[in-house]
Length: 72
Image (cartoon, rainbow, N blue to C red; front, side, top):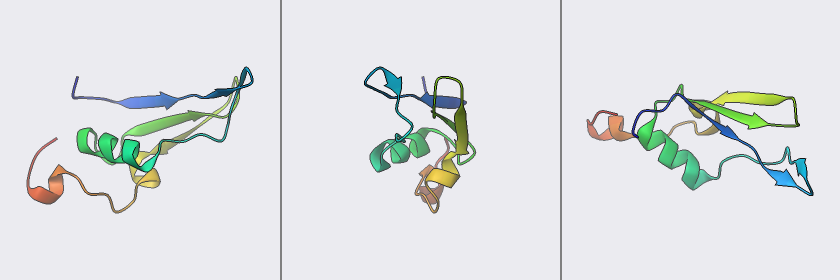
């Protein structure tokens, strides 16, 4: 697959959702290479709550194929 709408990030610690997780810098860059800056990243904060960010919010000033004249 090369076309994505969004991704959900969920982590558990001691059997409970750990709200201190987000994609690392390398993961964010890989997402940027396949997705546009408005790509949604959903991060669970508990069993029933979550926060949604755009890729641009988590990786501002990113480098993408747009910088080299390519297309996603």
